[in-house]
Image (tube, rainbow, N blue to C red; front, side, top):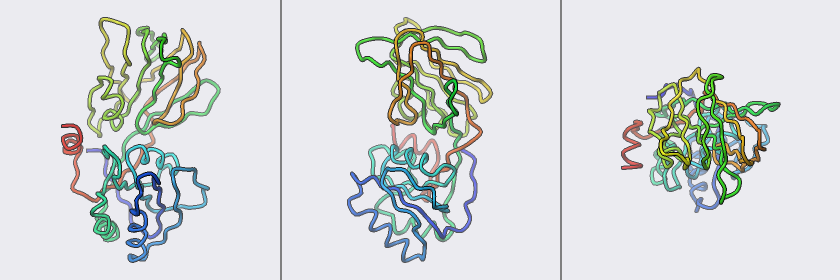
Length: 269
């Protein structure tokens, strides 16, 4: 299991809701929080926070994509997802049990797990974090991109491919899984590098330790870089991306009886 940490008393919360799937769930949540005497300091759609709040807990109404947006909006805060999406691997509460779940939270029944994030750095820029994955992908649908891969400063291989996915254990159940990567236990101190549609007879995903640094160099044609499914940014030919496991974590709360492999079975099998 990922590292479990306490949260203390919950008296001040924020709410992030996906308006496309809300359908009155946020009203139910607000009523349950008001009944419990909890201050709702900030209520936002999938936008940017103003930084004025310091919540004990962030309720997230939506799917895993909304959870990832909330992680960027409230870095370091505990996120409790109410699954209104299709997968809900990161969620910790069912919508039908929202009132009961709020009661559990206020009575100390919230468990919190921490999952290591990726640190992604481009030359001359500040490092950025990704809870799920960093995806380097070709810019033009009908053309491959050439990428050189180095690990720890040592050149490993060069691929003509659609791109690469670097994923945390949490992200190993997302895009990386669809591209043929392994499912990694949430408590593993590692990350995975998965090629996307490589133009090669032999290719395998790589599982990398927490001290290992990957450098992806775009040597033919432009590419795009997206962190946690956010809007992609262009990487010019000759551009480099450095990836490592960050010491920082995303903190996910759950009220239901949950385990990593039970969630894998429920979601994917």
